[in-house]
Structure formats: C-alpha cells, structure tokens
Length: 337
Image (cartoon, rainbow, N blue to C red; front, side):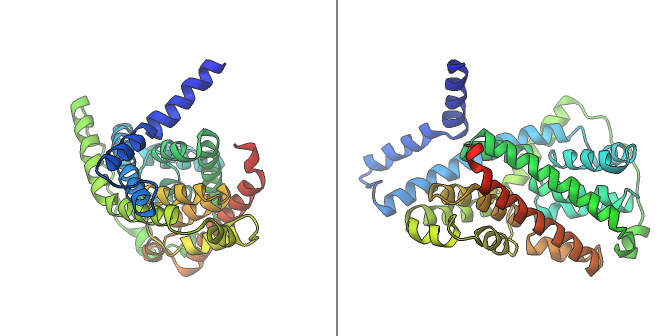
C-alpha cells in the first residue's frame, strides 16, 4: 500500500504538479542573479513555472480530449441524447459535456443546436451547465493543485449540479420561454463522415492549437493575478476577505466570479494562489464555478436564445447550486485532505 501511495505522490507532484520544473526554474533564476526569495523574484518564478505547467498540461489534455471528442460529433451526440428520456437523459447529457472542452460562450451554439433539434430543454441545459464547468482536462489540472480527492469531488458535484439544474428546469415547464426562431430554425441532420485514425489525430492537433490560441491570454492574466496574490497580498488580508472567519466568503466569491469571463484553465492559477494563502476549498471552487458557468458574456449570449424568465431561472438555479456547493465543501473539506 505504501508503494502505491508513493507512486501516486510522485505522479501528482512531479508529473501533474511538475515540482521539478519549479525547482529548475528557481535554480536558473538564481544562476542569473535573481533572488527568488524576494517578492519580485518569487513572482517571476511563479509566473514562468505556472505558465509553462498549465500550457503544457493544457496542450496534452486538449489533444487527448479532442481525439475522444472526434467520436462524438454533434449529430451523433443528438442521436444518443434522443434515445433516452428523463433523468437518465440529463445524466448522459452532463457526461457528454465532460468531453467538450468549451468555455461557457462556446457551449451556447451547441445548446442552440440541440434545442433546435427538438431535444428536451432539461437535456440541453444539463449540457450547457456541464460543458464549461466539468471536463477531463479540468479534472487533471485540479488534481495538480488540490489533489485527487478535491478534484474528483469537484467533478462529481459539477455533474450533480448539471443534472439537478436540468431536472428542475424540466419540472418548471419553461419551454415557451425559448425564443421562437430557435425552435423553428432549420436543422440539418447530416451523418458525419467516418474518420480515419490520421483524420482524428489531425483533428485533435487542430483543436489543441485552436484552444490554446483562444485561452492563452486568459491563462496569462490568471497566472499574473495568481502571482500577485501569491507574493504581494498579505495572508491576513486574504483571510479577512475570503477566510473561514467570514461567513459570506462563498457568497462574495460567487458574486465576484459571475461578471468575469474565462474558462476553467484561466482560473486555476488564481485558485492555486488562493489555496496557498489558506482560503477554503469551497470558496475557491465557488469562484471558479461562477466564472466558468455564469460569465457575463455567456449570459448576454444566452439571452439571444431564451427569454428573460428562463434566463433568470437558469442563472438562479446555477448560482444557488454553486453557493450550496461552496459552503458544503468548506464544512466538510477536512474529509478531502
């Protein structure tokens, strides 16, 4: 058993966490005469290390996920979802969202396509919640920061939120609040061509390059904010605002996160810095969920497809779910250490 634990610790720290890279960068900066114990030196080391780590992991993960995704084109996904009904359909939709590494804005065109294809609203909303919130890449990157228990728990509660959110929307019977042009638009149902292995590898490479190109700026911003939090803002300040002694920390993190726009990869360096300052896992995950699932640009885009009442119900369900998840994580985080 001890051997398994040692192997896992090595995998988490040296393969996912790339601690060797951090040490290598620190040695290199020291050789150049930079004091890595100073605020400026530590910030530069954090920035270089986190940028390389996230971009490398992101590239590898998106390549693998995109290869898997090549087996689930939109038309095939629609057919799969149309064969099941009720909660099982919501579960399947949420699970399919995990192999679509999209930000919230990128998920909306698929949401519109699924709705236009006649899939139940509950199914399409389960996908819309799950797709930006939970994916295989996020699981691995979260493991590199928080460890396996918290990362797996995050994925599970994200899927539960997607299923519950879709189910509640179904029970409220809000179909009439979808914009008419979405329901009556043309729907082309074309079988995807059979792809060769080479086609799938090229598709995965193209998706990887396109995704990295799209998100790298958010990663740079996220790492910059993370370096600022990590090395320049005193622990006491962070603890007073987002620490366990503030009963409104989860609510505050959720409210602050909603207007921001980034995918989960851009929020991870911020989460890493907050975690190092002792902020509760629930507070951090609430912030990440709010940014990824309820960004203001995605809400504006979604308004073009649904009427205000349905939009308000969606935002309300997801926001309340995120807050509940945050407080639950903070209350029981000792079980996940």
